Length: 249
Length: 312
Image (tube, each protein chain N blue to C red):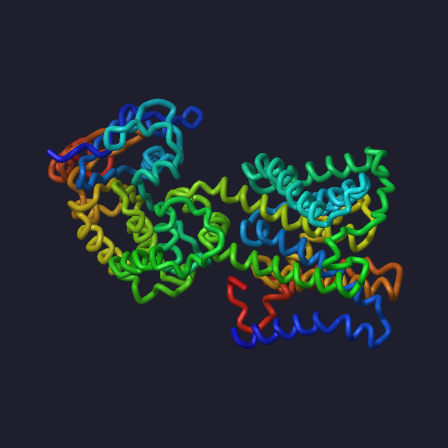
């Protein structure tokens, strides 16, 4: 069996009296895609925030490739190989698409206390960035200001930035949210091309995307995982259908 | 980009010609005026590094004018007149003060950052007021200007003018290199989207602090120039309205552009000079004029230049 890359144990995070994460444990093996689904307000984004290091859990631990990373900040985790996309597109809007990805490359190319040489002329940053843009299909838009890209392209750019850091773990928070049908199909197709090569935690509302991409699915309701298993198992689970898929069992 | 380069080159040529033109017109006052404007342009250029490119709204930049100025003044007071020594101390002391202020303030954001930088500057202002040794709130005269081993005589208004011009252009070039380097990309990226920066692995703090220190050091140089210009140093160098003025030059000229802050310094100080010569109630006119500028030139004066890209 593949190596365990991510292991969260007993995560708990409360905002006042509301337990947004209430004792969540989950595992991710190398090369696996693990989807987290659940109704709005189930605590999916809070969970991703704790995994990425933006939120400090009240209790529980997170291990990454065997190492305890619970106390590490988001940038420190990013340098260890975490990469995330945000539910609401988060890119450098006033930089070009290529600049955006080159910055992601730069963040993983040692310290940036280099004061003199123009960064935009450094092949060591630009070439890998261009390659990733081509990979996600944005090669032709490299010189465009990120703010002027279409919504779907901005989502692609965000994924490109995540990939440019050569991550060992991708945390994707609703990568197809707000996309048109065609765009979302293209994104799902692209993400499925990563399958097996990348370890991915995927939070997504779009059930077609989830059932296409996921190796395992966990269902989160009110901060607890109520079911976890292969797509077939989850689909068949009565409790899940009642709580989430909205069917009368 | 070509038209823009030509216009900026013409501006530099015009600045080179100022002493000759002023002498021809028998108006040596203008050498003095433009020299003062260029010293403030250096201060504005330094502020722009953190304000325009870094998004750190420092409302206390006059502190470094004061630290730079007092460094020169105090050394001269004890008979150390070497400009090499005085100006090095001015720059290093400003960097050190910026390091202390920055180490605390750069951890905060928004209104807190503004208030902390303002508070530190007020502390230095009152410190200057209270030290009787150096003249208290009257300040003190700089009896001998900085001496540069006979290389250049700052008492010669034209020679000093050209030195200030050269230093202003050098500062603009340094900022231009900085903001396009890896370092510059990090601070600009953090301004654009800090959450994104952290998610890809940048910890912005050390870079922002370094930018804050460089900015303070450059402004300290402006302080050393200013005290030699006025031959006088008072705590008024560090008045909070002075900080506001420098900030205004940056905003008026165009944030996050290389020529912007210098254009802003010229526009603000020259209009101020013209209005002051016309009526003593010049501030009543200047105020609304500035409001109109901000409303209608959102991108500042530099935004009016043809082909004004993002990077200046």
